[in-house]
Length: 403
Image (tube, rainbow, N blue to C red; front, side, top):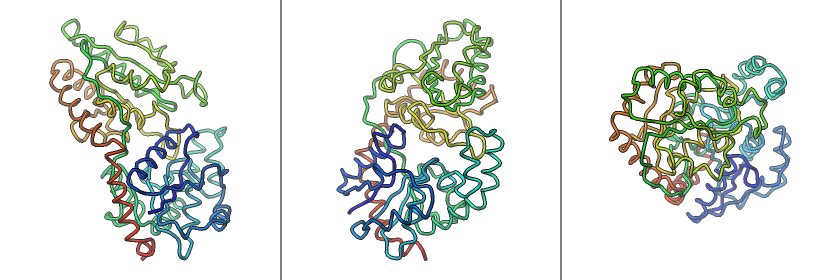
């Protein structure tokens, strides 16, 4: 089978490019010949440009074209739309990284221009996304009808996609993303060590809620509680292209409530991405106080300390998760490898932290499940499942998908 992969790839530094490289390797292991026609291609800014690009290439030897659809990937979206208009083109499939929409951003003028003008006020950009929503949904549905298969990472995402895109649920396949092959060392000895990774674009308020809950934990438990430590790690304005308002860790350092926690708080600012696996392995648990981005503005570039990357890293080294219920990562703990809490409700977070400190077996059980996920979701293990998905998509064919 020959597959054309539409996605950024290294040396592009984005997390999506890293994911696509691992995905390509998994498909190669399964015997699929993967082509990468967009490598070196300059961005395409319209459907007309994409149709011209598609017309210049011979697609007759390609069995399936697979697109990695994520916020910001307009070129991929346009090319997929252009391929969908070919009368005798290859089967089309896509992985949707930001359900419920295919792209999650306005595509049509003038809304797209306003949305991507970062110098405009945030509310103005949100309003453009809201006004463009009917056009974006119509475009998504028209393209989705031409797809022979759609990949997403959870049943909840699949349900949302089916409703948003008007697709039969059976055409959407749920497969978790592969995990890197890293060592899963035993949990460290000594006091409970929590790690909070904050990436570019992380809101400040959930971090403040975490600090407030820890303050209540100290106030209620006093010296009777077992010792613990929280490490706050991640990027600051010094290493980010985003303006300082997207640097929550520097702002959090000025929070007076941190002083009351004393040496229970440690910092790892601007860690080298290569050091993150060892940093994660040195802790017992990843705390992810993420909350959803304002509607229509969830396009921050994923990095190694962004929510999805942080969760993948924790699971890859066999560490459990404590994530916000409202976040997009709550589905990551459905197999007993962690817990969720409600952002803004200190009582729910406080209860989980108290249980962890007073019941060590709970943490051990979570870590066991995390290690099982680390093994079952390695890219080499996921290879056969991905190959099966594409075999079914080709058998179904784009012609069947358009009926």
